Image (cartoon, rainbow over all chains, first blue to last red; front, side):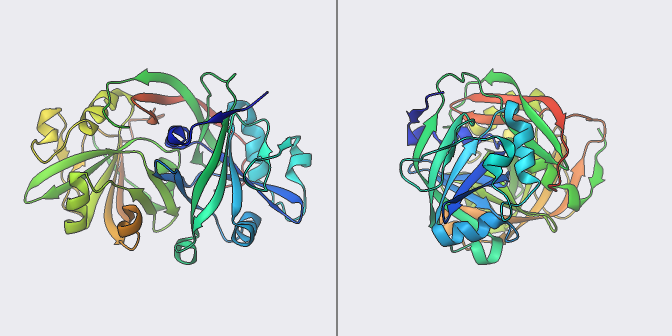
Length: 178
Length: 178
């Protein structure tokens, strides 16, 4: 599936619904994947994302060291692989190989995109001020990609303890909110 | 509908999926409601929530002044009222009256719960350090309520520009993630 460049001004609409995402990083040529749900948009453009990454996660160390990651958005078809990536650490295994995911080169950062995800956001760490107190990173999206073949992506949302909900009915309401 | 006390340790599971929420505040006896999607969990227990509230919102001023709010979770049945609350300012009107919503007394804070919402989180502002740079408030949940009659709440999620998605299929996967 060929990804298309996606306008940075529209990125908020991908993350504002609160989907489970898969964060890729790389250190010394070894890529890693972490599954994450604690994130929020913080600014429209350039898009800023705030996220909490536990200090116990391997990704925490890599992100501090390299300052780069990709946020990949899986649809429900990838739910089992997303959960599998959350169930183990990348310290000892290559999760791309373990779970049959395909790394694809990013354009602005070193970590790979996950090819199977319908959208990918290349990010750099923009602010570390809240890491010490809350493990909270502020990321800036430098480049965004989307799979134009996926018209109504069903993302997944985590209610805790392995219970997930996939997107259902779509509603169009007269909103003045951006 | 009689609400039941909900364990603080389980609150993260309500917000981690990223639903649209309605934030209530009160100043000089006048309650207000703001619709919000830019929020994330930051800690399990006591539950900490991070959220971005634009400085243009009336709620921003009230929250800075009073340090208290309630985060109310609507289901899809309330989608139109949630959007209506986002389409206007509380500076000039009482949104409870305008949209037929019922204020109910909270136990630990001054702002009212929205009776029609299936869950309510009474919060105090815990950290203002990131307000200047990002309009980002850290809230601590002091008390949580849930409607035990709502078994599988369908929350709504905002994709931007009036497009919302309601919760669909529920999945149970073998996850080691909390």
